[in-house]
Length: 246
Ligand SMILES: C[S@@+](CC[C@H](N)C(=O)[O-])C[C@H]1O[C@@H](n2cnc3c(N)ncnc32)[C@H](O)[C@@H]1O
Image: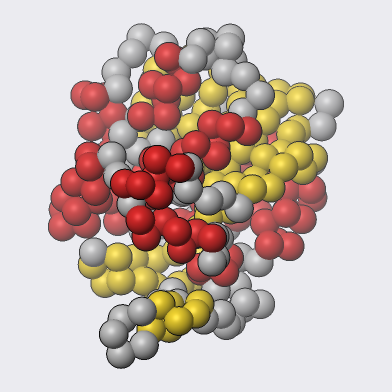
């Protein structure tokens, strides 16, 4: 089942105002890491899966990319992307990434930023991505860390009576599949996969593993969002860089 939660108006309003604040996990933890592992954007063709409002597409163009194709399931996101991050070398398509068919195109770099945990069939997606990469092309993605998605309700901090975070609970790790979380609204669906599945599927589909990052906050993030100190206790995200064999 493909859930399009970003077209739920209550969810979208909350999410959009969070991202507009510029004070988020994306800004201080995830995006700096994704950007740090890209070899170069200069002259490259980029596919951004789950592109959201096109901020990263725009970043690619600003850093010399030849062209970017952004794909997102959400009409809300694509409308904003076309409005806020429009450029003649960026195209946006509103489509589930699982349904993307581009028989005559291959890309130098495929990025997916915090969208893969919404995808039910990871193996099919990675096969598709591998087919869309040029030889030596890079696939870089971030996803919620398996230690975050493992427990059934993804409600992981164990707190004392004053609300202090005592420790992080961890369970159900080997039980892959659907999780339902309350995130602004009930019923946000994500998919849990083990680290071995995340990595071995890439290898099975012809990609060579290059780097794994479990990011912490950049220093400015710790000043603006003190709770990011908790990334030292457990990582929220995992970023994986792989390359298509030649
Ligand atoms: C957390 S947001 C990240 C957006 C963007 N990558 C960024 O970093 O700003 C996740 C995005 O994935 C999109 N998404 C979720 N499931 C998808 C699917 N099956 N196909 C394409 N996009 C999807 C959502 O609509 C949303 O825009």
